[in-house]
Length: 239
Image (cartoon, rainbow, N blue to C red; front, side, top):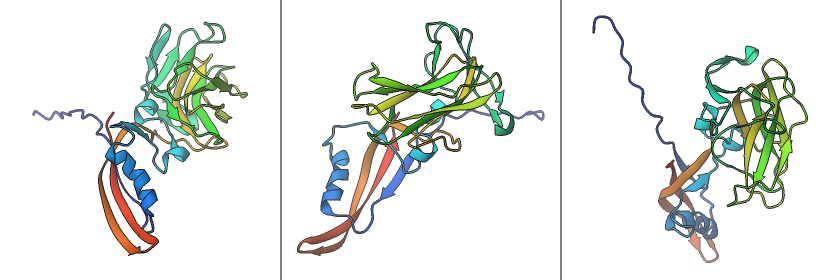
């Protein structure tokens, strides 16, 4: 009306993956997947790792778009920041007291745990600002919120925006991790990958809560001792 434009914000929809095995899938392999459909592992939800998430960003889309951990004392939500050659980041988080609380106030980058695999290197990174600032990976068991250990970056940030990373192997018993920045004034664009070093930044592809449903089998061969087929199924994000 009268030359004005109106917009309505829409919530981000839940993601859905339509997947299918090869035509040479064995009955045992089908059974392993059907266990999630049939309730062998409970009703869920389950953590889902898509094919691209380990080499793009295992954090959730919310975590990489500014939904960081609890904004406790001295932590504030920040706005857009200019990362120079790396472009603009729409959201960030600020610390008003980066050197308090012993070894420095920690900023939890993301709100969920990220899955890890024993023997597979994990790299966490973020753009941070303040000379001496670092990032750290905490390792956790399947149920405890008390870390089993941690790995801290040796390289540190500068007084201008820089990307700092840490790479380590999960400690014994660890199946999850969390990424924090500490002794920094400002942080943005966190990322976690299963890799030996830092990769190009990508938005979050992690999925912490999903269910598996709509399974359908297709038989391709059925002779004694040689039974093959494929299984199509859907993974839907639920939280």
